[in-house]
Amino acid sequence: MKKLFFVPAAAAMMFLASCGGGSESNETTSTTDTSTATEAPEAAEAPGADIPGIDTVSVTDVIKLDGMDDMKYDKTLFKVKAGQKITLDFKNIGKLPAAAMSHNVVILKPGTDVQAFGTAAISAAATEHIPPTMTDDVIAHTKLLGPGASDQITFTLPDAGVYDFVCTFPGHFGTMHGKIVAEP
Ligand SMILES: [Cu+2]
Image (cartoon, rainbow, N blue to C red; front, side, top):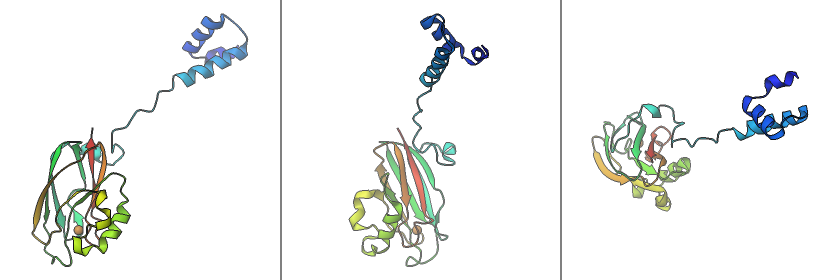
């Protein structure tokens, strides 16, 4: 009879309503059924919800980004609305010569293999380090910029999701990368 204390009220009521009394083995079955039925379905998470720091980023339609001589962007996380026209203002604020330290911003489609893209870009000097065989992976990109140069582009991220952006100047994509989260 001790088992009664562990039966949730709902299960006990169901048990009483359906059976009106019975053996203890029936009681145990009712309890199991109830716990399965009340399990909440997994909630759909917002895109990029697992990215550290994303909760402190506000939605914008103007992205200002600098590339620096230490092979880094000044910011790495942005949040926009999917389908909205976005303006990207990018500047290379470094001083090192273009041959040694140029930068660009290449925004990639979700699911693109960033490592493979960055590797292919190394030998694509003739096309400002945008690999010609992988242009299908590119949403938009700036020009390749030497010291003090800037470029402005506009683009739209069509679907909600997480879009990587990288600098494809040889050796840079390992440290020059970030994410744009497009909200639905
Ligand atoms: Cu760079």
